[in-house]
Image (cartoon, rainbow, N blue to C red):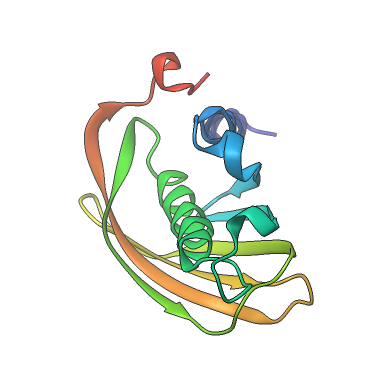
Length: 149
């Protein structure tokens, strides 16, 4: 493995640790895997996430899709935290208990703007939701204080 490859892999692992260390993720208990321009987020869907009609609230789909697209984008930016500028969400089917897995990938990148798409599948592998987002580099440096360590 070359030095640039090692640096990229270390960046992905640091982003994963930063994500898992975020306080909100203690509630969701996600898993994450980041690579070059891609990210996979898996969340165990529990009854605590359900609305009155007996399915996971759409906010759970939004979270996994935004997180997958966000970290796909941040995999391409190694010095600062990216910000979600906008995110379009399509909820395609109700999600019950089991695992919800979102795959995100960068579809366009420039110095100032990254576009990423994500799809989420339920425990049976059925497409449950899709989303796309625009992300931009912020002025917040990736640092150990953010959990990027």
